Length: 194
Image (tube, rainbow, N blue to C red):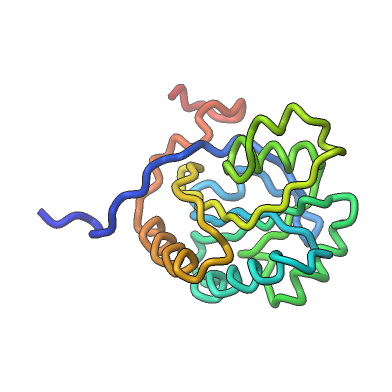
């Protein structure tokens, strides 16, 4: 019997917790908006002159390959919501040519953004949640790949070409996987008892 696809199945690293942020169009985005979608999550800030432009240049390659797939998204979260307003995120997104239907630049409360980075996406040490968010600044070069069931399946170094190539392949493979249907089962808004 031939498997659905021959690539090694990626392990589940964590479950994405419910969230609510605002995208570059001023629309509220929650976990419901990515149900059944494969997406890449990253953290950056618009005034970064260091690693962020290179990371987003690499994400642009992923975006170009999958932008027309209705089951794919990119979620770029700011680490500096005090500076990165909806308007500023829109300007930044437009400068990359990002379509707001498939690449969301998200802002919101700093504590919520940082909690998602640590607890959901594993892009920073969760122990840092014990420190006042106003005294912190996440600056990570890593991307998280999330499957259709809201599960983080792999972390990638967003600055390494071989990891970007691996991410392209892994997105393709996750898009072939079927959603289990019990995503966010512990949400208050579902009737699923699982």
